[in-house]
Length: 381
Ligand code: SF4
Image (cartoon, rainbow, N blue to C red; front, side):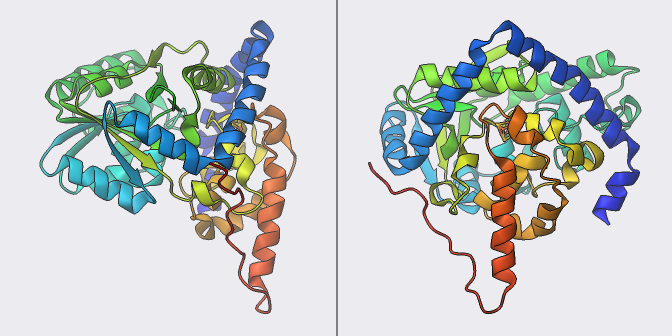
């Protein structure tokens, strides 16, 4: 049913193809102009795999370094992360949020909204919040809405404008008041340098800069795959992420260092990946595989996992233990291999999907034991 509805929705296809046209050309241009980006990506993949093989070691080191400058917490899953953040915040507070897929993964906004006032500060994500949908794309969450639809959605807040520029200005004025009064700012993390305990954040709107600096306190959610040994690799990670989605150089790179910082390290399945899925942990969540996927271009975020859609969404759903809700999606993939070809990390997503199909087939056989959940990497710390 969801698939049929998506097939009938022309604006999904128009929005995605428009983005692919704009951003895809910019990725090609970036790679032509800065060929070292491919070397960065290769170096990054090796580093991310190395860290993934030793998450216990790197997390322990990250916690010790982070404790020198912040209050630090470790959450084993989304429920625990929400509880920790809810306890830090309390009730009746004003919260401004940066766009963060990991906060979508754990359902943080709706958890906090039960007892607080929460505002998304990325324009696209604010539109998603008001329309009560899930993001269409990891970097461009509201890409499927037409200008007319955006005018209607923002009208719910009394925000008016005749075109994109006027609307953006009106949203800016609206959010500025929230930034100034906010008790807490919350962000995810694009990369975390363990050696210095620095949080690296990349953006194009300037809202993350305000979210992390203006409120009285700041909370960062750092999922384990964001850990990298040092500043250099963390910087390379956000450069690769930006370049491969076509927004390079990014307008802002933030490294928030301030009093009142809380860092929540989130595992949620990452330290215990199922055999065959480890490569997905090197993903920088640039979203390029989403835009280039022929199935995604037709039905958008219906294809993929609950939180993470498109080709990368399948692996991430398996890692974060939500794949059972989207098993049928495994069979929509054409295995064309485009995702692997354009992925900066060269993640063999078709292999991951074939592996998961096989796992599903095994688990449907009543004589076979259910798929074994094994820790793929041994802690060598
Ligand atoms: S799987 Fe590759 S292309 Fe897709 S989001 Fe991750 S890094 Fe980007």
